[in-house]
Amino acid sequence: MEPTKYLLDEKEMPREWYNLAADLPKAPLPPLGPDGNPISPDMLAPVFPMNIIEQEVSAERWIKIPEEVLEILSIWRPAPLYRARRLEKMLGTPARIYFKNEGVSPPGSHKPNTAVAQAYYNKEFGIKRITTETGAGQWGSALSFACSLFGLECKVYMVRISFEQKPFRRLMMETWGGKCIPSPSEETETGRKILAQDPDTPGSLGIAISEAVEDAVTDTSGKTRYSLGSVLNHVLLHQTIIGLETKKQLKLAGEKKADVIIGCTGGGSNFAGLAFPFLADKIAGQEMDVIPVEPTSCPTMTRAPFSYDHGDTAEMTPLLAMHSLGHSFVPPPIHAGGLRYHGVAPLISHAIETGLITPRAIDQLECYQAAVDFARTEGFISAPETSHAIAATIQEAKKAKEEGKEKVIVFNWSGHGLMDLKGYHAFFAGHLDNYPLPEDVLQKSVASLKKYPKAQL
Ligand SMILES: Cc1ncc(COP(=O)(O)O)c(C=O)c1O
Image (cartoon, rainbow, N blue to C red):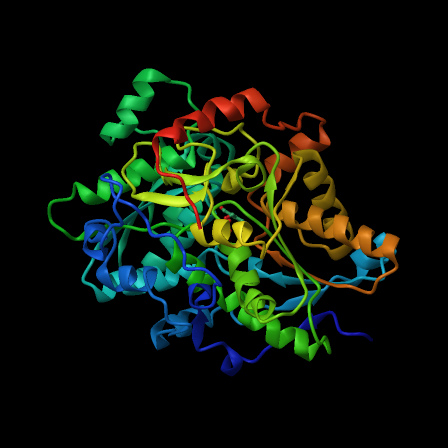
């Protein structure tokens, strides 16, 4: 029997995270404050604990993973790498397809890789309560899980459309002791203002981030901080354990190199987690196609300008250099809630601008069909976000067939979709549409960026 899974022993778990910032050919652009000048680390202190801020600005190539974090990660890590032999057979492709199964964590996605680290650093710093936002509910459940293991309180602002579509995610958060409310809410000034203007808004990640940041910085006890599940450098750093494990596992599988690396991309953390350790090889001269995948309804990387913009709707975060659809953009209510973000990680934007990675946008229906094909060959039911990575993998496997090339394709299976079956139901019933973003809507939204400094590498 030919192997299906490539497994590492717990002892082989990476002991350090990889920081791409150390190897980029050009220095990343700094976040800017309201006056247009680079912010200093202490300006972030009301929002994040200082030990996390130090990681955010670090230029060290390798950063040690604390033993307490490794102990908790060992509940599900090292995560298995699978060879998708049945999918390959269905496609008749000469490509060898591998996927890293991040759905084996207790909350069911890659998100706890950073949630555990962030809860640990907050606890170390004396913080008692953490606030956050969540799109699909994966991040909120991951942080609730991590906070429960470290004895911290957790408050989650969940984008309203997902709160309504995914009631079981809220119950998961509550099971781990988190408190989850729909955003926009009546609990913050930002939420009240938005509800007054648009009582039926589906909400957005940008709005939920504003509410969670406001909640943290207005706690006068100083014991609350905010935590972000994607976008920022330290979050991407914590996810690199995915790619570092994958490299070891590809060796076990007898592969000398990967030709194509794929991940779905909302804020960018699971894609970066898999891809950044491989980008180190690409920077050193190895040929490789590295593809972050987004929905056509929220085409941040493929159609939005590279600009400075806020990470949230209420303009509470510093200005970040990233591809952005404009911070007041409210994306169409597609089922991949975690991919409905107006911006993307600055490190990913940097990699796009320097030609290291090539983004791609795919329609919702093609993604659902890919997820169904995957379920009917490989068995696993994917999160709607993850389906974007599968759709791109199938496109690449078909291309390899046309070219007659034996490529090695690796994608990140970022999470299971067992809490997302409503979307599958809508797909089977023919109720889902593609929502490619109309050009006039995009232009109107990005017009708001004109007042911010240009991002130029
Ligand atoms: C399963 C899954 N994959 C991907 C994402 C997208 O986030 P990121 O781009 O930070 O990996 C999410 C976000 O909620 C998710 O839940």
